[in-house]
Image (cartoon, rainbow, N blue to C red; front, side):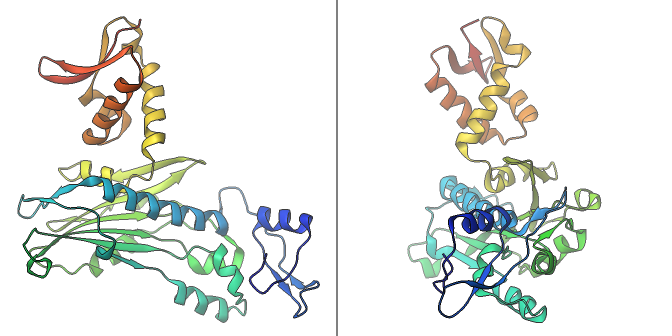
Length: 313
């Protein structure tokens, strides 16, 4: 129901959910005064409602990933910093004010519609070195997550097919406070995909590393990183796929892998990392979980290398 108390019929509600348009109601709340036109989303475009869902989902998943990290190594000092997730160290941001300004500029302001548009949410999670007193601790690592959608296109059309350009990535790195003691792990998600040049222009520097994330289909994600010493941690932090989704994907891949069709065949951890495009730490977690759940699987070391063994076939 709209915030101002307007009433809709059951049929109206279904159309509202399906197409994501608003109702402006009379003061009495008896009938719509102005119904927003039905939005037909072209093939290849992303509706504003879906972009908003992806915005929220990405940030929630990354926050959850951070809460399970437990520790991070500062690339600047090689110091391993243990931490427990603390909400007070999470600095959230969004572009709601900019969104309101765009709606007013296009004479289309409706407070109810704000809930259906992407807000380009983001946050910085600050990780400090250990100390007896927190005020004595030093900021060492910043995990920065950001969603970038073309807001004006969404305001005007209710959808967008504009991919993210490379300049947006460099704008983000320019906003980092480049000090000698702080390293930034940056994750950027674009609901509408990226221009091809982006994948050849992912920024990297002595004090920052970046992952670029795009949705693929209804549930899958593509994560693009430069293959260097930071790649594994970037995957651990910014992969929006939940542990349950990873488990099912890895389970299916392994069970159908040619190597696992022979009795006592085994799947090396290193090979799984390469094929499944997950970090070693994440594949290790999934391997352990699979071995706990299935009696015919065993997780052990062969010649000093961790492997998953199939004892069933």
